[in-house]
Amino acid sequence: MNKENNNEGAKVAWAILGFFFPLIGLIIFIIWLANNNNNSKYIGLGALAGFIVRVVAIIALIIAILKLAVTTVSTGASDLIDKFECIEYGPGYKLVLDGNETYCYNSKTGDIKKPDYNFEDLEDYNESEDFD
Image (cartoon, rainbow, N blue to C red; front, side, top):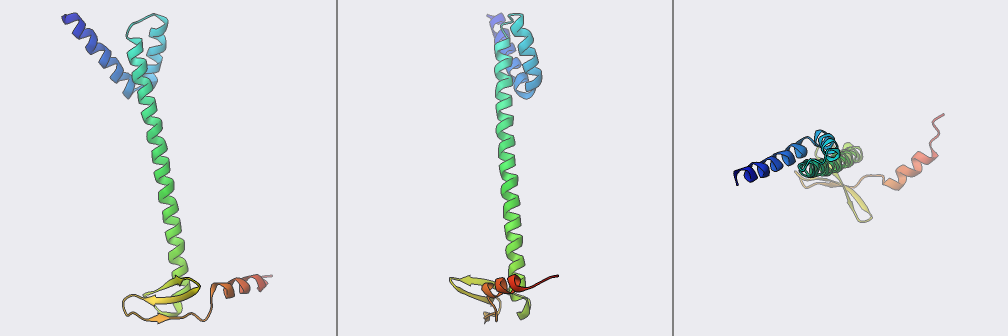
């Protein structure tokens, strides 16, 4: 009975070793598989589980980094457009796009200013401008 408990403990230990060190677990699994060792199954399963967990974690990390990068870039571009459009009115004004209407709003004072230009005017100006 005591020998069976030790054998079960060894199986769990090999599985844990394979989980935390999948490359080592895979190497030991291949060697033991060739030698018909009974513990090869457990270290192989531990290595497989460790590999799968690492792949999923790497994919999740890549998705999180990409999402953070896209959010940062889009927020930065939005702030830049706001500052460009409303800079003539001074600090505190933010660009507001309300349907077809564009205006600058100061949340501290409640002032609303209508720009003398709109995006279509800027596009026409950029297309007609010759930079030679």
